[in-house]
Length: 265
Image (cartoon, rainbow, N blue to C red; front, side, top):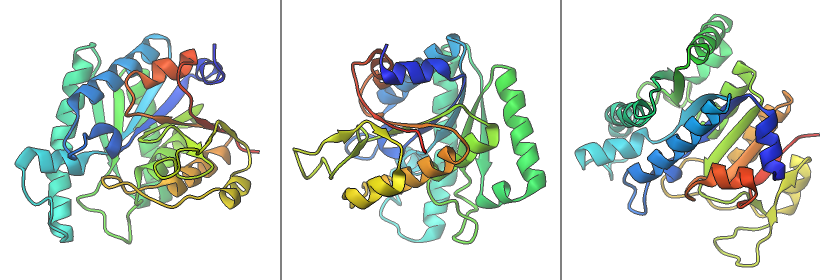
């Protein structure tokens, strides 16, 4: 078994964050085939005794795909309206895909304030534990339709880290559109080298080029490193994989694909 395979094997409680770019195709529309493949792999993990919580982006792209307008609107009201429409579409897709495997899903829409308030914190935690214990798959997203700058978490890498810490996860997996952390941007530099294990985030940040974000996502490599820092502080490792690759979880566990693991100091 691979290093990643050993890590996943040793973990029972896993939070999996699925990015917008993982769920969308080249045109920015929802990629149902990719969603189906990811769900199949998560079901395999659950049947292997793992408990899974999903943190999923994609409400915005689902909203655009559903009504085919407003995609160029920059007004916040339109963006939030698209997320309100898209959240329904996103959850329906997850519901249908997991139902094929005889699993139910549940939705939790959160804001930054939910994590900063002790009472709300407790209720979220209790809800997550109840759902997972009963075999239901919680799907967490930011409540974009009510979030403004003052209460926004801002990106689902951070939301994934906050959820992992709150639940006391054993592992956070980020499925993004890159293979992991490179010493420089692989989309620009063909000779970029993948860094497979990171123990010192500050040291790596000082050495690599972290410029660049993607078109449909809100977070670049910097947000992923900060997410890793958040969970590492709680003793939780984080695994970064390319979720756009078919069967990425299966192949990473078997050693056929690589990624970056953040272990912390």
